Image: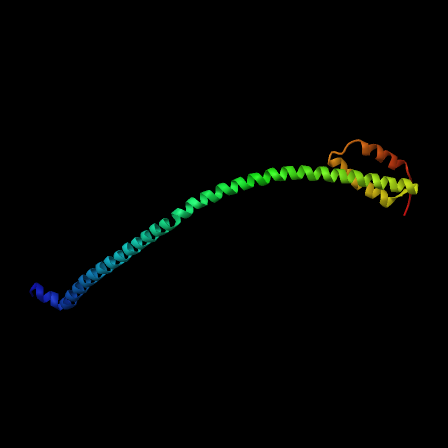
Length: 154
């Protein structure tokens, strides 16, 4: 038997068909890869184009953003200066107001001739706040006189 007879006997036609199918798939896949590569290149070009457009559009805005940032830094600095001045002013005003309230409270109790537990509690709260605001020793003398008043339970 010749070699070609053996090939035909064991399915030579099928073998030839498989080889042709394999060659067909090879070229088909190669074509698909080329199409996919072309799509990727096209998408990349589109992304680059979009990036360039965004860059062109945003360029003036970026300059404006720096100007705005500089202005905000200046405004923040001014606000901090104002805060410091205002806080010191408010502290002094509160301290003076507390001194006046403590004096009035002491005078009312002195006029009555006694103090109640509620008077004591109010005086102590105001005195504590007054000392935290760095009040002077004048109220310390008033506090001593307040302590000497007779206490009545209410």
